[in-house]
Amino acid sequence: MQKGFLFKGLGLRLMLVLAILLLAAERADLSAEPTQQLSGQLLVAQPDLKDPNFQQSVIYLVEHDDGGAFGLVVNQFVARLPLKVVAEHFNMKETLDKPLTFHYGGPVSPSALFVLHSDDVTLETSLDLEHDLALSGNADILQQIAKDEGPSRFRIVFGYAGWGPGQVEAEIAAGTWEVIDYDPDLVFGDDLESWEEAIDRRPLDL
Image (cartoon, rainbow, N blue to C red; front, side, top):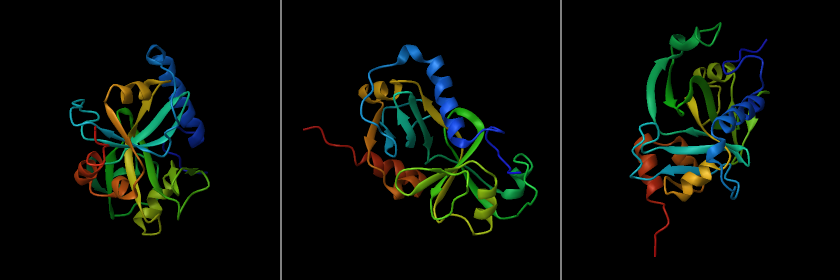
């Protein structure tokens, strides 16, 4: 039996779809005409964004379509903890002393944990993403990382960011976010420098 730690009994893709559908039902009044698909791109918080949930954030958009968007904040450090500290919560039989770095992934379902990582090591349940990335929702990936047998690059995050139909497009149009191309150094690099470098890549207004 696999040790799932997101929503027991649901596959990761199904969980993502359900999460987006729930957000859509709650926020249908914010919908707008969809634009181009942004899956695999980065949302960069504009300097004047003061929302504490997203201030100076860089978000990797895992999925984006007419039904909404699902993303992970990748540059907000939370804590560095030994794996054994979180093992009981995730029903892991084996505990290790090696510390792992955990990040804030967004304000939705803050106890849900996701691992965004390179696809050189994956699980059968991992979700394939753009840019040779994968998203895993099984405690086995934490064990592999702690044993130095996991993917070469990864972000372990709690929670996620979600938008209903048209909502992320409306926020981009309002100037809340800048969209830039994916760069692995922005996703897996130094937290503060990641946002500062990303914001410097905004197109100039001529």
